[in-house]
Length: 528
Image 1: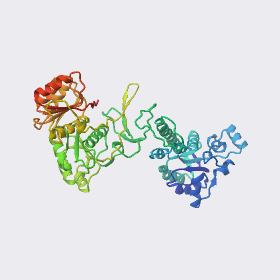
Image 2 (image 1 turned 135 degrees about the vertical axis):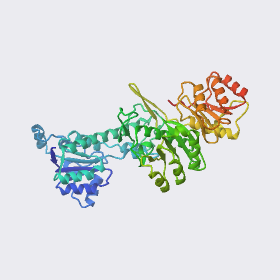
Image 3 (image 1 turned 90 degrees about the vertical axis):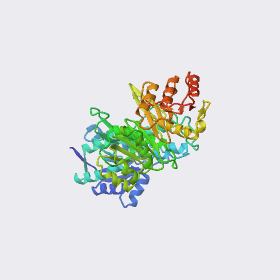
Image 4 (image 1 turned 90 degrees about the horizontal axis):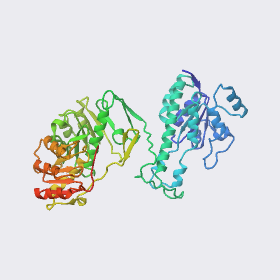
């Protein structure tokens, strides 16, 4: 590999973590340091000899720092091709000195944009111009210039400089260049996505209030690779995980033990975690457990303790639970771990595990334990041929006061509670979906059937516990009385459904004839 010695470096960073140590390492190899503003001040305070950018350009920093590195003596020093006779003649004629390394990280635009009530003028002022320009110039000319954009690279570069007597290999410069272009792409994406949501440009002192619910005019996605996976849904499919860098949700989860997470594990973990949160969204709500198989719940329940919730969820369908994935919305304690460890499961997701629980699970070497922190709802993206579909996340949570009782008999208080529970579970079941439930526990789940009647029959057929006295939830309306009649025949005494069918009157009449209670939600929860 062709290694090139670093003789002059330009440093201009927002994040000054590790800066002094790296600059000291450069200086130790005789590298001349050039810097700007606060970066130069930090280096001088550390006792390092630093030349101001204005000494290089012969032009002062101006316009509140907007113009300092946008100068031919900077970009000429970065872009000229060493050894090219014409380029060499040009830089000699204009007194342009070579710059062999640029160390840059950009204004923290995303942090500024995330500040509540940030002034529009302040937001715009935090769009970095000179930094990305230098990054691109240095990266384009990677054959001769090293561009450093990540603090995490300082240590490895320090070691390589030490090994190569102050030089970096072509392989390293190429790797740094690719990272640099990814950095500017992500930065421009963040700016474009933020400004896209601001419909009108307010006065500089006014708050920049983006419409967070607006769908983007252009869909820009820029997530770095978080993890290469062994394969996708099947062994012949390649797969990888890409994360937004927040450290939240399944993509940002911390794996405590077990085998490497697979594609299917991650999909199921997302499903079980979202359902567990759905069942008990508030801190004072009871613990909730969701047992998932192929993204559908085979059991879900709430209970006074994690152990009770787990036992109720498991009893709904213990056969299907074998080899499943479990989501728990509270810290898992030793008592719950003792019971869960009796079942073969692929993975468990929870916000935490006590030391006792970790000790109990440690004997199951392949069991994946995953700590997850809640992430804000994000739009849902799906592939279609030639494009992508994007929609809002289905975050609706209905309350009892919003239900419309349409039958002569209203639900009892116990039925109302069970209906809301069944409705929350049904939202997370593949359509067509029917859920039978009782007392904070699923009793039967009919998922992904082509006919709603078949979904009702399948849910009843799968039930291990008695169906008599349950309630039933349907993710979409009953188009005819036959689906309703099926759930009542199975044992349901109350039904929750969206309503909105042209046959609603016939379905309501059937419910009154059968003596059951029925409520309409006015919304549906298709899940394809």
